[in-house]
Image (cartoon, rainbow, N blue to C red):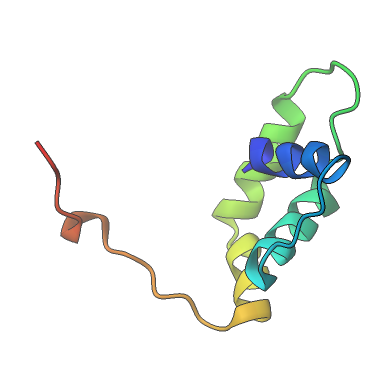
Amino acid sequence: MLCAAQAYDLLAETHRLSAGEGTREAYRTIRGKVPFLDEDRVLATDIGAMVSLIRSGALLQAIEGAVGPLELMNYESVSRVG
């Protein structure tokens, strides 16, 4: 998700982007904790912030606040190919 936020920033510089409500809220939430990577730095703090957003449920709560409850997939019910 960190990479997706960074890619969104970089693409937005040269392309007109239009993300959905949930994606925009995820982006805003991530960027509220992890700034744009504009120069080299150790990423442990950024990764830790992202882990906290996910584990705490804050990211999911922010997205659901924008689009309503999400139907979460049960990993065990996903069929495997191969």
